Length: 356
Image (cartoon, rainbow, N blue to C red; front, side):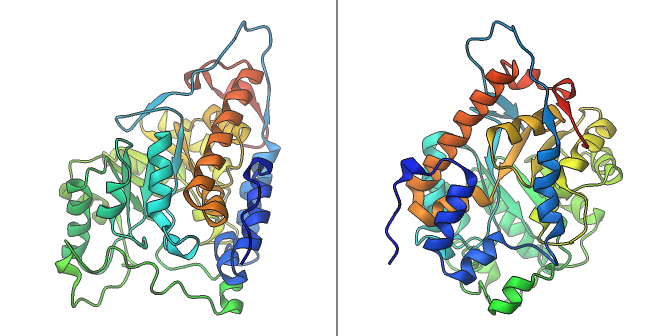
């Protein structure tokens, strides 16, 4: 059994990644770290972020910074959310429950996956007064899809994020070589209490989702609807025209289509196309406070953090997640102060140079 490292020594994303590689089996670690194909898109998520450079402003008379913001009707302490990650029991026995406890302590919203290890109701019960968001994968049964949305509403989730970039799972060579399967760890919402409609059904993810499914979802719920997996400005404006409340600029962490545009490269173009008329979240490659600041300057209202908190979860459970997020928030505050930005509302493209 690997002993828990001294958490005070874990400061960077790479520290948590290295510690997680020791805490997890090779199969489970590869599952988190991997991407599709040659993993070029995953690498571009990082390299394109690195090529964006901050242009700090000086002599601004700033003694402190305000990271608070409002997104999708939620008043948040920072522009940070926890991305949906399925099957978290693979990384910690408490899985999503452990993450929810950390989320609750920090007030950072958690996006709960359809394919979670624990039910959306049990996860919500651990969030306390912190807002939760439900991420929807659509299945081949609309009765079941609608039941998931209704359960999310009844459990107090504040919005629905509909993942739209997954008509099929990307070809991920590491999992193929490892013979990896997450079967048995992603069925928290499929069976059991309050989910009788799932019993006896042969549920499969719907591969032919379309804009009509988006329209259908908006009819099912009065909650804000957000589309996750948008990288084209044409899709972003279509979403806006159809009354969608927000989009997540995301390529699924490079796990679906290798060779796709990086999230940060798509962000600026989408922001210009939508002219600030729709909420924009960014997912992909974020590792530090300066990464978050770059995303805000290019038009994101908030960012989703994924691999970082999963690594921290695998190393030290709920305490690890909390430590990683506290450090990330501190890094954002320091990055803002050293850039001459006193509030997230002040972040704009004038502070950025680079390919995005």
